[in-house]
Image 1 (cartoon, helix red, strand yellow):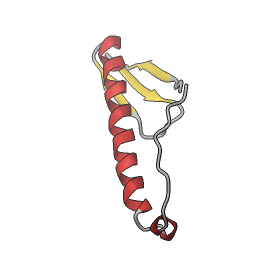
Image 2: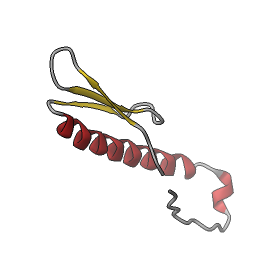
Image 3: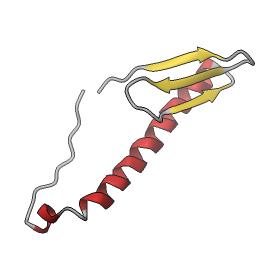
Image 4: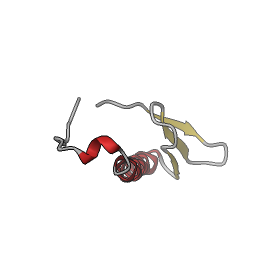
Length: 76
């Protein structure tokens, strides 16, 4: 999967960063390199949180009381 990270110079110095395709993934850094590292951390945190919330909601799904197949996927 490819995502687009946007780095905007801040008027007060440093950079503001966000992922265009995923609302809520944003951060900042004093340098561009720091902002790049921080955006990856922010992306991981958001994805972990969303995965945990999705698992919690899935437990409420009546279809999952049946036997089912669960499989991780990786896409580029």
